[in-house]
Amino acid sequence: MSAYKQLISAFKGKSILVIGDVILDQHIHGSVSRISPEAPVPIVLQKGEPTFSPGGAANVASNLRSLGARVTLVGRIGHDEEGKIFLNALKKGGIATKGILKDPQVPTIIKTRIMAHHQQVLRLDREKVDERMSEKFLLKVKSFLQKTIKNYDAIILSDYGKGLLSKELIEFVCVLAHDNKKIVTVDPKVEHFSYYEGVTSITPNRKEAENAIRNIKITHTASHRLGLQSDSLRNLDDVKRAGEQLLKFLKLESLLITLGEEGMYVFEKGKKPSHIHTRAQEVFDVTGAGDTVIAVFTLALSAGASKYDAAELANYAAGVVVGKWGAVAVTRDELRNAVKTHGAA
Image 1 (spheres, rainbow, N blue to C red):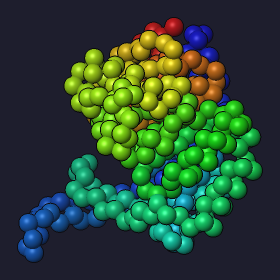
Image 2: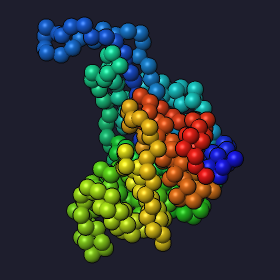
Image 3: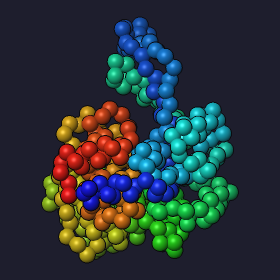
Image 4: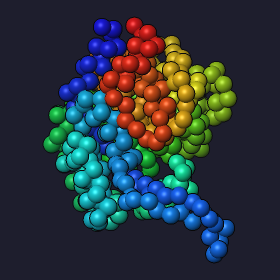
């Protein structure tokens, strides 16, 4: 059995904490046969009942669970029917819900996609972005983390910019993780890049890395002196230079920039950057690929993989999920098969 296959086997039983913005995804399916006489829009005739699935940070949790890990999700929902549906969906998926806390200040975030003939006709979002959490709610989250931090092998911060991962909470998690010697990885939101200083790794895509440099240059007067220059990543040389600068500026252990059809670039403190070529055979839908990448990357690190090997496995996993429609979780068997097919050592 290859080293990668041994790592995949070691995923089972690892305990991962996911903290982030949770979303309830609703899909309404139907067909279109005519245009509305009231406005130039299609009329969708609904077929069947709406379907629901946990999205946002919960999709990261679903990927981890599918790979055999024990998962606890920390997020906030509202006191509403959608929150109940979300909790039930997590329970069915085997994801621990003790960290899902209700906040009377916000509704459960729901994204409704209306589908006709396998195509999205419309998306309707309901959300209230509130980064000023009440002190009472913030204390609840902190208390839960303090009581349970020792139970986990690694922590993932899944930041969708919906308000849960405030500067105060991110700093609290980072200090708590450092004191307890826990791995911390981040799927980042552009506006929050400077909050992630000192974490184990962050996993932006090319666009997020570009926007992060642009944002840091605007908000940090010392950015030029510390090396952050061009925010246009037109080629791999630009990516390499920017990655090295971000790694140094944010004092990270490692940085993983995903590049779509060009694969990934891995940066590690004290090592030369490494380019990993894509493993995707066909690309149908990139939805949820970032969630899969951070789930596999973090799980591999918790199983003892090097940063490079963890990124390589994440690359295989991304190649699997982009070959499917929608945000889907990769399984251990699919990952093993991808490794076998491409002959990883």
